Image (cartoon, rainbow, N blue to C red):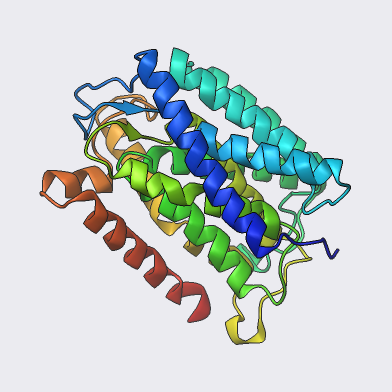
Length: 314
């Protein structure tokens, strides 16, 4: 399906609108004294608001409304339903620290909505000797993969710029490897461009703006949508980038997956809940060694790109 695309002026407006939202929301939350709590797990001591995800989602939502009212469906607007639900879950968690069981339940609902929209993993493409799998098994497996992806992205949102970079990387690489622009192109570009102002606000020395759970859960869901599309029959790689799709999907989020598995093992060994927060993430260990956040982001990005040698080298 070929969808109309946004123009260059629209892309500039996306960045500008996100920038304005970042400033306004930061000003509003600063007046209300609603700052991110600083505790033993924090890697920052500066005042910061968790409004970055709000700025990104509001930018996406308003642009979607504009194009919807002008009868230009630049992407499947029904995707705003699961994205909106997960965003609201994240906002609630930012303010009230929602129980992880409640978040899991709502994440499962969002996963089922995506499945009913056709985003389901029904083919293993030869991995483990499997190809197409039964309908019920494919739905259960898709829910499991969705939970892993969303929480893996949420877990790495612990230092400046890391989750932002991971999301932009996945969006750009999926589009780059595709033989043509995917139906998610405009959705991905609006999100990626609206994330750019957050680099400035993330790396400020004071009065920072963080993604918050609203932003990290939203980005995790968007990444899951992109990877489910990659694993579907409609996604075709350029001839120069022939690769096994499941291996490609896993390599695109290799760092969050490895970090999630590693932290879960450490917590279980220490007889703690795998969802209990701590500072055992790989990026936290680099912070303790004295590396600045910008350097850590570049290190992780470089390692992530190296993982792409796995699918393209087989």
